[in-house]
Length: 186
Image (cartoon, rainbow, N blue to C red; front, top):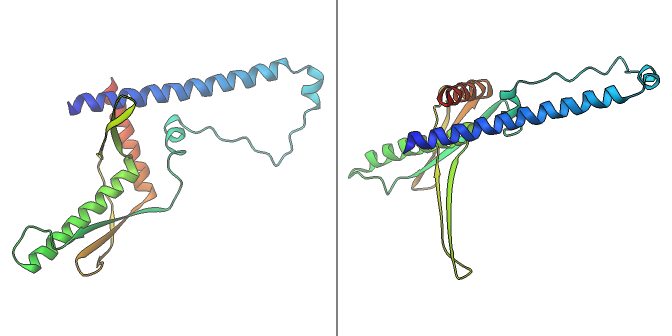
């Protein structure tokens, strides 16, 4: 089931990428057509100031990711865990388990920022009334190179862990992910 969901997601991403590429090609065709329809007298009269430089064309991968995530030097994520609900008898062991759980929660939050979150939603309507509304989310990905910023108690019964990830590592992770999606489609 999981493999089928991954293939379905990969297929949707591939279709989205193809749609973006087609839109870019159509835009380029319209621009070329408009230039061809311009009379010769108007073409010669156009003067481009020397300070204006052409905008570089980005790769399809960069154009898909750039609008989604704003450019930052690092991304940070914070995770939380409650000490009292940890399943152990000694207070010291409960604290250690809460620290570990807060660190894993911070990694989950980083993974959401890098790869996004898969959301399944189901709404049941009967007699024009919503009978049930269900949401399920899933996060999946690989994080490496995260830096532990801090582990601090937040109140009497909670620990807070903050991690950061360099933007270059995020770019590498996304490139590996898109490459994996592309190889799964074939």
